[in-house]
Amino acid sequence: MDNLLIPKDYFDSSIFKTEMETLFPSCWIFAGLRRDVANDGDWIAVRVGSTAVTVQNNQGELRALHNVCSHRFAVMRTQSQGHGPLQCPYHGWMYDCEGNVSAIPARPRFSDLDQKKMSQMRLRQFRVECCGQLIFIRLTPEGPSLREYCGEVWGSLQSFSEALGSQLHATTLRIAANWKLVIENSLESYHSGCVHPETLGMDRSYRFKIHTGPNFTRYEEQISATVAAKWGRIKKAFSSRPLCLDDYVFYSLFPTFSIDTMRGATFALNVIRPLSLSETELHSRVFATRLSPPELEESALVRAFNDYSIGMAPLVIGQDKAICETVQAGLPQAQYSATLSEEEERILAFQKCYMSQLSASS
Ligand code: FES
Ligand SMILES: [Fe+2]
Image (cartoon, rainbow, N blue to C red; front, side, top):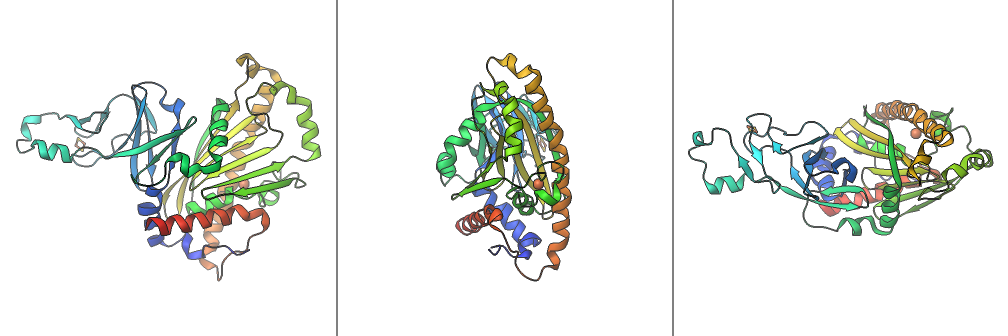
């Protein structure tokens, strides 16, 4: 199979500009988990393409607002998470939950600032919807609801997110590669043998199933007999987990979100944020499963399994970072489009979606 994207698509600045200005705004982009904004006044800040956005809990309701001050355009919330009212750090302007300017220090000195101008300075508000515990935002007002966008994976994303227990690990990593390379690397296991020889690539005798749809991919890997035997010995400790799976299951939602689980026992949630044409941030969080009663989460077997998952994550992510950077260096020298195996089929699904979203939004 041939790659649909050509090498230039990964290092052309005009393409990156179009992606940030038209593709990302028209997609549902993962912002965080409901637990990140659990209380009234909690907020998170993210970038959607090139737009800074903040999502705030206002008395239980989530609102997404442009995170750029209307006075002289400072980005207001520069941390990823916090609590309290929306106030610009530059001159202290404040905004209410609708994005209206609610307070201006030394207001009489703006003698020509009338009501009309004040209402023009209201912050843009964006769509925000949840699938279970997952919060997504979308910049353009028109287009499908989050539910329509997720399609047939809506229920699975919902149940995966509801099964998340305590967070075991979180990493943010900068990768010197185009965001599409980082996504595509996450959408194939073919590289495991070479890139992750001591962990994921140790046993390549697994079987896999791939299912793709308009905005998603699903990958299921049946564990090998060796791994199944090991899992059989500890499985009982996880019998009360909400998602009783025996395999590895991975979902991606176009363009930058994925959630996967190792047999419903641990979960990884990844989101990619493009920083520039050749720089990408990867946010990765690892979670335990919920168990009932919750005391079971502290049992020795469960903790050992969780420790194994945490231990593996930084190693695997570091290896992926290094290989993506190598590909970014090689791509400008490519003479033709890449070739894909059946194990890399999800990349094709990603690229089909990329092309149709791009043509629909431009
Ligand atoms: S730039 Fe925000 S208050 Fe001045
Ligand atoms: Fe990898």
